[in-house]
Picture 1 (tube, rainbow, N blue to C red):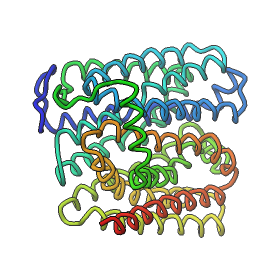
Picture 2 (tube, one colour):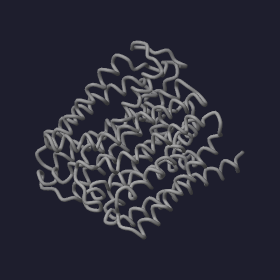
Picture 3 (cartoon, helix red, strand yellow):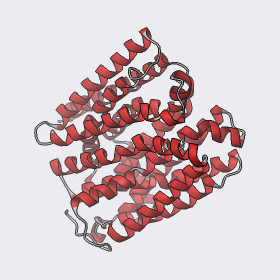
Amino acid sequence: MSARPRHAAPITLPLLALVLAALAMIGPFTIDTYLPSFPYIGADLRATPAQMQQTLSLYLFTVAFMTLFHGTLSDSFGRRPVILASLLLYVITSAGCALATSLPQLLFWRAVQGLSAGAGIIVGRAIIRDSFAGPEAQRLMSLVTMIFGIAPAIAPVIGGWLQGAFGWRSVFWFLAAYGSLLFVVCVRRLPETHPQSARQPFRAAPLFRNYRILGGDVRLLLLCLTVAFNFSGFFLYVVSAPAVIYDLLGLTERHFAWLFVPGIAGVMIGAFLSGRLAERMTPRRTVFAGYLTMSAAAITNLVYCALFPPAIPWTVLPVMLYTIGMALAMPSVTLIALDRFPRLRGMTSSFQGFAHSFIAGVTAGVVSPLLSGSALTLACGMAGMLLLGGLSWLRYLHLKQEQS
C-alpha cells in the first residue's frame, strides 16, 4: 500500500479486501434483508404496498444525499473516523427500525439510516485508490466486488429465515448486530490510508467550489451515469422482488434465493473475469465485453417474457447473464471515474455514489411501482436502463476522442 496503516494493527491484503467488502455489504443487507418481510410489516403497521415501497426509496434518497459528504469528510478528516462514526449511527438507527410501532416511525429511522449506510462503499473505494494503482487497483476492486457480491444473495435468504422464525423486527436487530461487529473489527484492523499532508480543508466555500468542478465535468457525469443506469437494470428486479416472488412466480418468503442467488452469482462471475482480464485487456475493451453480455441478456429477457409466462428458472437466467456483464464493466468504469480528479478521490467517489443512489431511488420509488405488474414490463425496464447506460458510455468515449 502507498500509505502505511496507522491507528490499527497491521492488515494483510486478503483481510483488507474482506473488511472493505463487509463495509460495502451494509448497503445490500439494509435493502435486501427486509424485502421478504414487506407484507408482514405492512400488515403490522397498517401500510399499503406502495407505502412500504417508500421505506426503500426514502432510504435510498438519504443515502444519495449523504454520499455527497462521506468522501469529502474522509478527504478532510481521514478514512477511519468517517467509517467508525457512520457505523455507530448505523447501529442506533437499525435498533430504531426494530422498535418502530408505526409507519411514520419506520420511515424516520429508515431515512436516518440512509445517512450512515453508504459510507462503507464510498470511503472503501477511496481506500483502494489510496493504496494501489493500475491493474493492482482493478484486481482489488474486483476481489472486493466478488466478496461483496455474496451479500445480496444471502441477505434475502437470511431475511426470509428470520421472518419465518422470529418476525420482521428480528431483521433489523440482525442489522444492528452486523454493524456492531463491523465497528469492533474496524477499530482493531482498518488502516488509515489518507495521510495528514494530503487532506483537504473542510470549509463550505472550497466544498461547494470543488463540487461545482465535479458537477461541471461532463465526462465524469457520464461515467457516473454509466455505472448507475447499468446497475439499475438489475436493481429494478431487486426492488421488485416481492412482486416477482409473491405475485408473478407464486412463491413464498423462503424462495427469494431463486431471484437473488443467480443474480449475485452473475456479479461474482463478472467481477472474477474483470480481475483476470485486468492485465490482458484495456479498460475500454473490458467495458465493451460487458455491454455485449448485458445486451444479450436484455434481448433474451424481452423475447422470453413476450412469448412465455414467468417460470423458474427461465425468468431469472437473463438476470444472471445481465449481472455478469454489469460486474465485468463496473470496476473499469469506476476506476476511470476516480482518476478524473486524483486529489479529490473521496469527493469523486461521493459524487459517483450520489448518482448511483439517486438513480436507484428513482428506480425503487417510481419505476418499480409502474413496471412490476408484469414480467414483460420489467424486461422493458431492464432494456431501457441498459440503453441509457450505453448511451452515457458512448457519449463519454466521443468526448474523450474529441478532447484527445
